[in-house]
Amino acid sequence: MSKRDYYEVLGLNKGASADEIKKAYRSKAKELHPDRNADNPKAEDQFKEANEAYEVLKDADKKSAYDRYGHAAFEGGMGGGGRPGGGQGDFASAFSDVFDDLFGDFMGGQRGGGRQRASRGADLRYNLRVTLEDAFAGLQKTIQVPTSVQCGSCSGSGAEGGAEPTTCPTCSGMGKVRATQGFFTVERTCPTCSGLGQTIKNPCKTCSGAGRVQKERALSVNIPKGVETGTRIRLAGEGEAGLRGGPPGDLYIFIEVEQHELFER
Image 1 (spheres, rainbow, N blue to C red):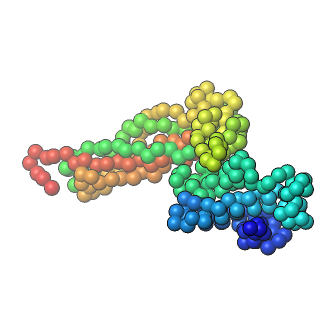
Image 2 (image 1 turned 90 degrees about the horizontal axis):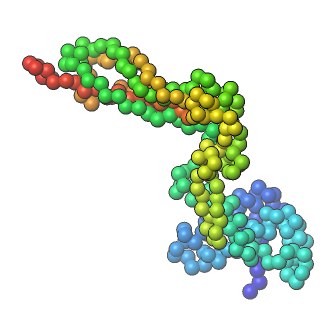
Image 3 (image 1 turned 180 degrees about the vertical axis):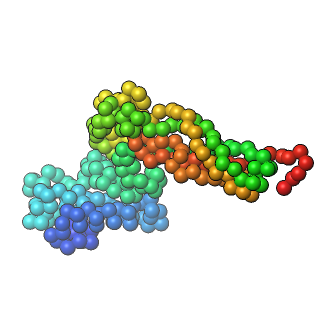
């Protein structure tokens, strides 16, 4: 059985651009992936066919040869370097181009999530007990909250003197590294930068490169009239400072009204 035209396999017109070829392949890979077509026995062969077509058309030299000689360019020593897509490594290489699109939802829903140079600080909870009289009348109260605040020495950058972090050499800023074994490509957090995508050559001596330090803060809280046990008050931006200059989290104050000796609500 003769092979189908590679452009036809990907649903393209001859002369399609590199971006059009990549976009068409990603669409086909999603559509034909065997894991999504358990009831279609032909899906695996069609998926491999699309992969073979992409292996040729994504390479400028192979594409040029194919445009001139068709499938004959890769048969009988025409200089095409052997059967396209025939090696297991080639398949894994092409498949990794759409790995994020196929499995992004299962990997946390973020492509290149490790590129973030900063991360949001954690939200904090503070339990506050008030008397029944205070709950009735309302009050202004100052509380002491132990939390992480932005390091003043490095302005939250984590680098000595406030210098900018550099791109991680291990993951090239992705925050993740990949290992390919045959058909499978496995992603894991970069061990060098812990997923941040950046490293610091000279960490700040005050915060050891974290960009934040531990400190107790005094905050004034307005307790409105009529609060009851379980009432939650949100103070935006008053939570833990972000890592490497990231935005702070929020502080949530949970109210508990103490029992009164004589009265009850």
